[in-house]
Length: 201
Image 1 (tube, rainbow, N blue to C red):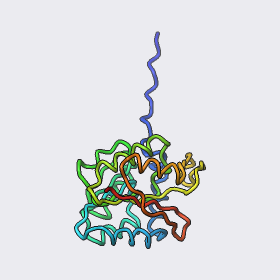
Image 2: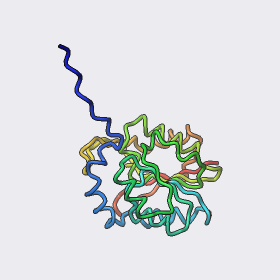
Image 3: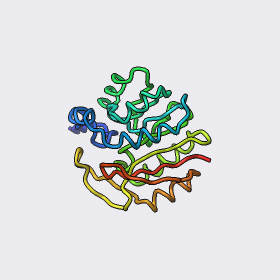
Image 4: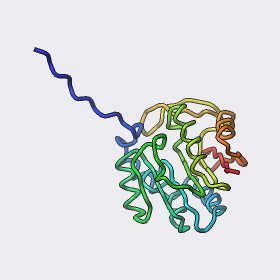
């Protein structure tokens, strides 16, 4: 008699974040790292900007900056628990629970895209895909702000234990250029997070 195959668990599209969501939600409410940098970036956007919060998590203080400025706010996260928490915190935002590399981005165009603490959590090729696809949904003059270490490196994420990968400043500069974006600023915050600020001509 042939034994039926065991049902397989669906792949974790959140790259480990759904498993640690409760602890991350508790921590994120307390962390103000990067708030000043995100605020300075947000102040450059039009008052009625449409903004995509990519890899939004549960909606911490950095997301509050976007919400507080009255932007048309859209958010994407692959973890169901984190997307649910974001939706509860910002009911006026449109929230999609889907991986950044596969997201349809609501079929919208944006004046700004924030990807804080997301890019390096993805494998190398999905990072390139995300940047190219963000370039496609930025309006002319629109701005992308994301974080990733300045040097090329690999390490295990402290929260999920999964590999994190930075493609390094030279790698990100090339990807941005190939995607048709202009990198015009790099800087660091008090937590030593490295930022890339690019715009669409």
